[in-house]
Amino acid sequence: MKIFNSIDEFNLECDTAVTIGKFDGLHRGHKILCENLFVLEKKEGLTSLAISFVDPPISIVHGVNDKKIVTNEERRSLISDAGINVFVEIPFDEQIMKTEPGDFIKLLSEKLNMKYLIVGSDFKFGYKGAGDVKLLKELSKEMSFSLKVIDKVKDDNIDISSTRIRDEIKKGHIKKANQLMGRNYFIYGEVVYGRQIGQKIDFPTINIKPSKDKLIPSNGVYISVVQIGKNIYRGITNIGIRPTFDDGDELSIETHIFNFDSNVYGKEVKIVFLEEMRGEIKFNSTEELKEQLVKDKNRGMDFFTNEHVK
Image 1: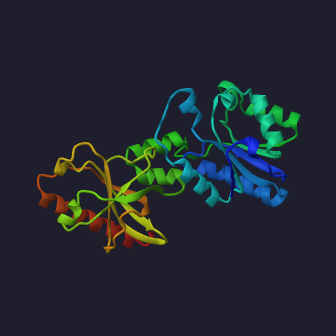
Image 2 (image 1 turned 30 degrees about the horizontal axis):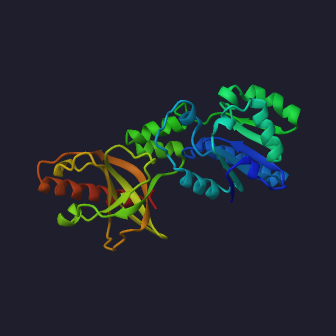
Image 3 (image 1 turned 120 degrees about the horizontal axis):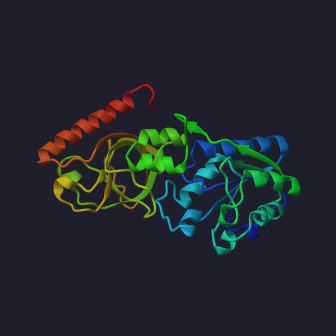
């Protein structure tokens, strides 16, 4: 996948089919946009191209700085995995922010050789979000590009959106969030040294340090898989402040990997969350904690023995 950091950098001579969005989460709605690009790529010979912003417009315009379902690096990887040929990731600066709707679409048409544009039905663009689908239909005729508008994808008769997915993750409802995204939530991080408490109670874990802008699920225990290099392992992940040991308010993300004893300190790993198990509990003793951890492990191992889990 080719990546450009501004529209002005674009130097391909081929005609393109374009979609635009925040792509925070790369959920089922985003996947439909991408699938429509692939159809055009196959039938019309157009190059698939996705556009997004380095920072979400809401963070610049309204100062809202939500943690990200996917970081920019993760988003690029997911878009590449989806099969998009070209990704244009541009800064949402004052110049872009104040561009009038018609001028913004003209820029895409001329700079990106845009022959087809695919957007969601709630798509807004241009200065103060003044542009909408109705205006796009008029502009498509003026600028001679084709337009396809995709209705919002629903789950339980409610629109699937990044906001809805973010709320589910914050509540620890990982299974529901995964259903809305059409993929499993994950966190990348470097394996770092912790307090070695797991080792002391014969329940070793790997601790990771995620990106500062990554959204973290609510405190609790989750069934997970861990990718280390090309290898995949099964385990359970605890997110919390370890209240049994009075660790204060420093958040930790630690995973007990089943049947694993390798040294992976300093390595980058991927924790994939499959299902929530329980919330965070403060135990009265280390023995109570160990008993619960054994129950958690057994439940996790039972989960992986089910036929639907490969």
